Image (cartoon, rainbow, N blue to C red):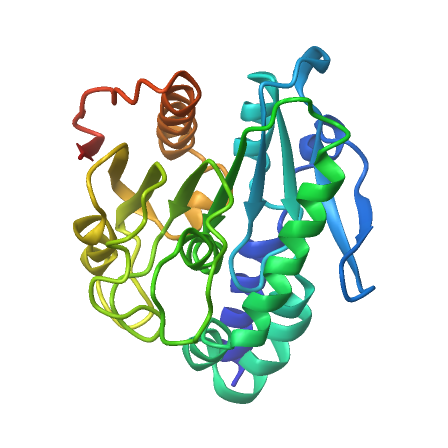
Length: 285
């Protein structure tokens, strides 16, 4: 029992830990009101020097919060992006923690990531963030970035067919999915075949799915049609490496630089990917 509690605390700490530097670099947290009049927290990273190239909204994984992904948000802010990290209350730690205590980590995560109402709440959160951003950035370009459950959110929004009877609006200009799910409890075979917008998918050779290896995450890329679709596989990257900067800085550098190259290609309508390296295999179609 004690070891189980230790694993729970370690997992939640890895999701919620925020370096002090993030509090100094990011703007003060902002509270929004969404369509059903419920409030949601959001961390705002204003575009550097007030020059707003475009808006990126980051959707966290199950049990996460608006205080994650600082390394990516701060990097894009310095590249003149307005970045909004949204806090999803219905799939945050306050919901996940009691589920873990009752049924264990894997079962709790499996339940939460297959709850349709949790995604519907996420879509309302994201829509509220987009509405807020319209007055802060004159560029009409918007990108949805998601990790883990956030990646599922992004792919459903982009039009991926799923077992949860959810339909996305495909209203963003591009999508970034870190730790995307393969065929399984959320997505049907060939779920991604009708996604036309540019998509960047990122995973790692230690980024295992709940009930499988990391390689099942490649299902989505295999199903995507051609046209500015990238898949980056980072050697040795774990699931949580994408949520926060790793100590070595290797994953952080690869994620930020690849994401920027992809987004620059989207903006210029010239989607040319950098070459693969020993640290990351990059496929393009």
